[in-house]
Length: 120
Image 1: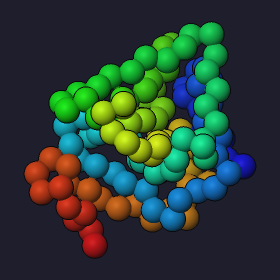
Image 2: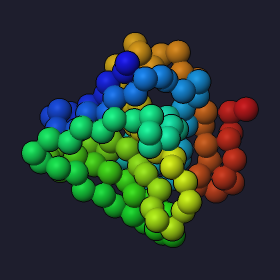
Image 3: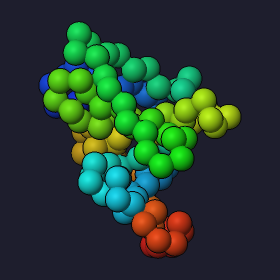
């Protein structure tokens, strides 16, 4: 099992496996959040939220909710909204130990312009 958490420990994400790849996106939002996304399904992620709760933000077409800790503000994960028929959930691998995620291949995604992976 792998557990990542926000800075203050209010939000913990537990997963049984790491994905083979993770995505670093350069869109206006992901680049500001400095996230590294590992894509799983809702059933593969246990999310534990403490007393400060979480908040979420949705931009543009409102298909994704970006979740953050209600206390320290770290971006923890994103989930699809009711507008999308999907159980995909992306966890921010930057919340996990760097030694744990060292084996995950990082794919660079150009979400700012071309919507294509740029390092393949």
